[in-house]
Amino acid sequence: MSRKTALIACTDLSGYCYGEQHPFKVQRYRLARDLMDAYGLLNLPAMAEVRPRAVTEPQLLGAHRADYLERLREFSAAEEPRADFRYGLGDVENPVFPGVYDWACLGVSGTLEAARLVAEDGFAAAFNPLGGYHHAQAGRASGFSYLNDAVVAINYLLEQGKTVVYLDLDAHHGDGVQNAFYGDDRVLTISLHESGVYFFPGTGFENETGEGAGRGYSVNIPLLAHTDDALFMKAFDEVAFPLIAAFDPDVLFTQLGADTFRTDPLTRLEVTTHAYSYIMRKLRALEIPWVAVGGGGYDQMNVARAWTIAWGIMNDRELSPRLPARFVELISQLGYPHRMLLDAMHWAEEDDRNRALDAVEKSIAYVRDHIFPVLIGDYGKRYRT
Image (cartoon, rainbow, N blue to C red):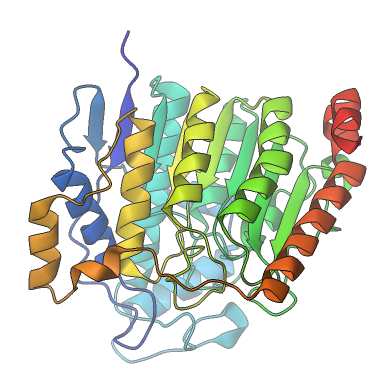
């Protein structure tokens, strides 16, 4: 039996816009799909491109308060600009635009469908690039996120009796997902992100390890500016990978934000396609049913590269590092020079890089001392010696 994969298709997104000056650009989804198509990744024999069914009100209420959903729908239908900062709506970060509720539901519906395909229909992997809104809280919007698609989908997986690892590779801490499952030992949340000491959302420190039944099931590796490929892979190899393997979940759920790349205008990490590809291959090798969503990424070209790499690896396809000629022609017509698709060559000063290394080693040591004994017992002791 062939290994089935699914790419969640979305409707025309041209009617949605956060604003011309806002860093979140809806066009990145089209660029990612165009690049996948140029590599021949949209007509693979064992893949399906699936349009999701709509998320229901009870499913949303499992993750969000009724009063917040009511206000979001109200503002979405309003003809004049609206704002309510109690709900995080209408500021520069989370603008209210016509159809914002429908926009948010598209992401949730797609991620929920990806989870259903994996849990019920036997798909080995399902990818919803339009998901990954990990900052949305139960009662407010946050960090460009209005509805938390991961929380809704993981709630569904738990209802199916599944255990879940949620791995967040976005440059920003996955605070909304961590908060939702902070006391739940059926969900192991792992987040590798830029340190909240100086960076949004100001959370995700090593000592945030869960509470009650979930104590030890929340794992954070905060990274300093100038964390590069080697350090990012070190954090993954020494913390994330052994914990995923030891927890051995029924479903692996990954948030694949591409704002860790060194070209991203909002972050100060220095990851490239090398580390990104390496981690995707390691996750694929685990052979765990895999739900993946998009996330952050504000250099649109590198978002397209990252998600195309991920989709290729999910389908066991080797991609040429040379971009397809028709994609290069397309982006040239859109005003993007070919060089914009290359990894930027800015390297950290030695002192900055050493500080980043010290921070990674400190975080790894904390997790080994406080998390490994809870989750993997004697296996953890071997990692601490």
